[in-house]
Image 1 (cartoon, rainbow, N blue to C red):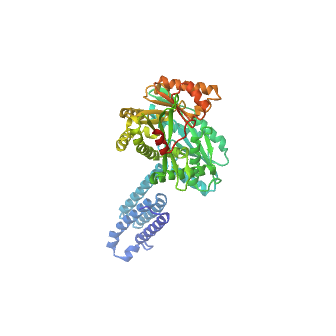
Image 2 (image 1 turned 135 degrees about the horizontal axis):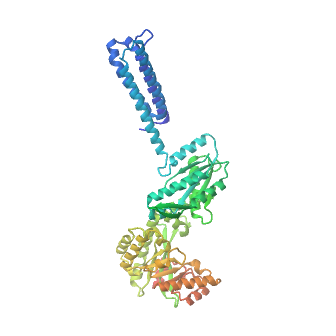
Image 3 (image 1 turned 90 degrees about the vertical axis):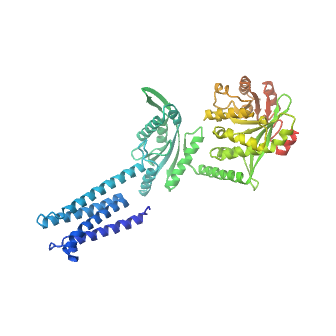
Length: 547
């Protein structure tokens, strides 16, 4: 059971008092006798003195266990007094060695207390120190900041996240990743002033407390420059060069808050925004950032409520053949409407869901509901209509996605050959091996595959050539300027041409005008999706269009 600070104080005082009482009982009186001997007989003195000394030693050890620092001081005083009294007893007895065994016991007890206290001190140091960088960890940082707070010191708190460490871990191993973290820690420590506190938090995050009088913008920039410098790691005698990338958030005590825990949270919030900001690698906290984070938490709550109470609904965006406006099928789009009539845009709630496991539930909800709603229309239609469903990068790269899809197809009875799974290029950026395995299993079921945002992602063309996509979607951002920009027209033409080289059909999304439609037809685009021919439709309107 962990004692409170007050409980420790009471225990230390009680133990000290008991020890001093026991010491008084065995101390010699001025006439050479002892207090204990006066209370009992001589035999009792011989028998009980050793027991009392053992009890005192045990109490001293317990005091050290209760509080290593203060307990050790008390134990030293009590046990040294006991040793001195025994030495005096030896002198007074004219060299008699009767007290000697008791003195040895006391000295051994003192040594035990010293060893226990040292072990506790080492354990305390380990508990506040990062093993890789030897810097303070989060617990140690908070302890130091509380001391700064007690001294009424003002300071800036900088949270730093180091990116791209995965490339070192994957290519050389985690021990080299640890070396890189230690190198970054050393570089940061050399940049900051003597009064700063550098600590290593979880993963690849650092926290630096910088005195208020220091130029925070200058020091923060210097830290970022050090982080972004080349790191050379020697692997089996072969030097390997790596470049890490950092982004940071800064909050100030007490201007932003006079709470240490809130200060850390504010710096973390600012760092999060820096990670999402392509222009600023260092973000300084302000209240609007917190409001945005609170909004994210609020929307996350709406998502959970919508999944539980069915506040979501689906709309269906028609897809048409460019040459004759023949219906190809529909893209499934999710919407959220709260009981009070408030609509939450998917552009707001989908990115938030993607940061949590909620996106898995949304993907399953959309799949199951869309296949159920469209099953009869697909089965009774004479055309080979397709129902396209968007799947998140997180879901398509999870090992169990293909199995989940197979179960949903079986449970709904939806024909797999009329289903099209739509993923983004970003899905191919991480966990490629798992994603490709899922793609192959999806094709094995008979379903089709579409690649969204084609032409805007980071996937190499050589990589895409080996993936069996049936449809490539030209992103709306590329279509928007085809009427006014010759460069945009040429780029869209190139994207469509590349799609056909890959033996895939091509659809342009976000087509809003007849002139855009005309230009896309001229570039041999296969399909069209957009307001020029139809907005997203409610279920019944989409079913009517099928008929």
